[in-house]
Length: 179
Length: 168
Image (cartoon, rainbow over all chains, first blue to last red; front, side, top):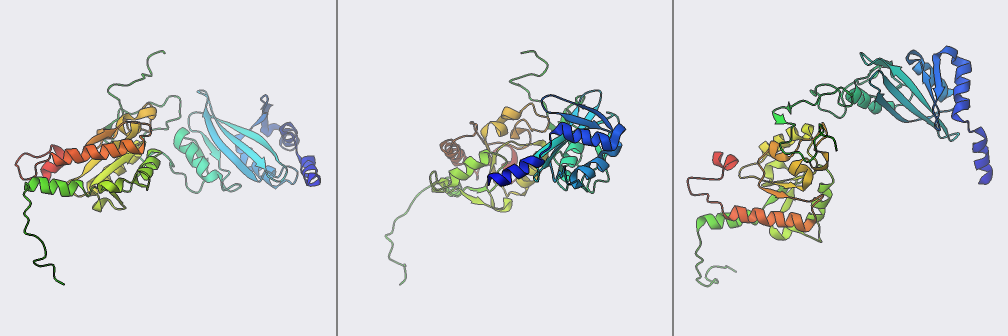
């Protein structure tokens, strides 16, 4: 048993090693490598499909699992974050794509990992990022006729929804007061 | 063997309203419908330990056969519209128990963008059961309160309950 574990461990790569090999291969498409203690690589949005394909198919990285895909609104930009994992080598890495807040568009990775389907729909629903090439780019959580994308920092909650008031008459906590 | 002439000649006297109400309160069929974690307590209340069926309440899997809707869990705005649709499908007279903090007032999630702050914004509620979630005893108490309310109704009189029953 320990022999098997040792064999797996030997193939394990540190995230920084993975980013270094990406850099050698894609050069200027890797915009930034940073983050402590968990390193990430910021990649060019136009190359995300290509890079993800390489990370999945290359036998040294073999990222067979997209464990999480999510989005963050940083007020000046929107980032889509990809957490990749390899069951084969027991290692993982994090990729980020920076997008403009106005009209954020990025290529889908649904064709690489099917798991991306719903996660990208959620990012679209809550942050308004459009994934080009996605097979079913609809809202997944919010109602179809919901105004705006609620996890955007500048989202304003509507006063009512289909005649249902969203304002509580006697709130226990008020957001406009300091605690 | 015929039962004819085997019964003693007893006569029970009651008021029609009370007889109707007694029959209705003893067969409150609630809709098999849960929204969040309160639904787990709702299932427990219907289970053998608390056994709400002692009081004549049994789950029905169709809105069209239900007398009572127990709103068990966080009501989102998206679900609020669908809940109203289900309520509209129930035949009159119909009742609602709001179970737990979330459906009473939005509870823990009242500041969330997606949550309806209280089911009473959408539907008329008869009994509110507080708790997060309420224990089965609390929900049973809520049902007994509703039964009391049903017993006080007057169906043959002109003035009826406000709201839905007046249209019946």
